[in-house]
Amino acid sequence: MGRSVVLAGAERCGGCRLPPRWCVCGALPSVATATAVDVLMHRREQWRPSSTGALLARAVEGARLHVHRSDPRSRSQVKPPDGLVRCGHESWILHPRGDPPPETGPSGKPLQVILLDGNWREAGEMTRLLGDTLLRTGNQGRETIRLVRVACPPRGRFWVRDQHQPGHASTAEALLVLLDLVGETMAASRLRLHFELHVWATLRARGKRALAEAFLAGSPLCDAIPAVLTALEQATPR
Image (cartoon, rainbow, N blue to C red; front, side, top):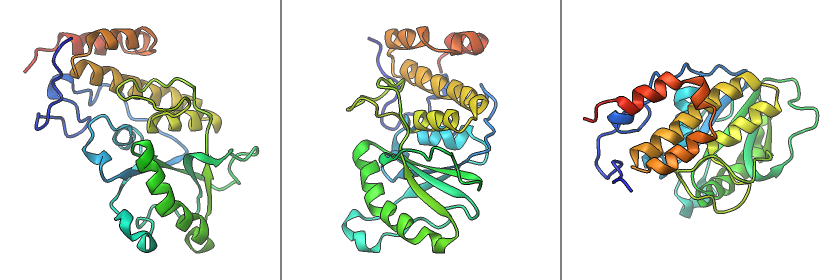
């Protein structure tokens, strides 16, 4: 197996967070959605180059990234980050322990989705610390806020991290399911290419060539952007 080039202190692109040799910035156009996207990233997640929350902030037009820095020892003092809940929107916080989405979809207001970005323990921490406050206050009654779960596939495509429970998915995969659910199929298809490229390039950057080839065999990337893949494979290492 090849040696990983994602090492502590290694140079990384400021956009895609990959080593310059595998930079994918500019490989795909950004994704426009009618759904407003906000990512609440755990403070530890911001240092993980594989984060798909950072991918969403880069790839989705108008997406906003908020870093959760609250001290878990001070739960009584926790408040939602300023501006997390968008005025005039129905806000859905995605979490596996939420309620099913309303059968009728959003209430008629523009939809905002809030994604919790971190490992499962960190996502649980953010839910406990912030979810009750958001759902209780409703930002002074101006918005509708729900804790919502979506049905993710039993086996996800985020092959760069272990999945501890069936049906648990990465932040980006949860948004893909949500976009399909609300009828934004074109946006979901375009975002899926960003996600698949992120996973494949991360595997290649880590020296996991065989795993990357296996991943590519089941990916839409080969048909969608063959020239991009070829160019990345043939790029001269720095």
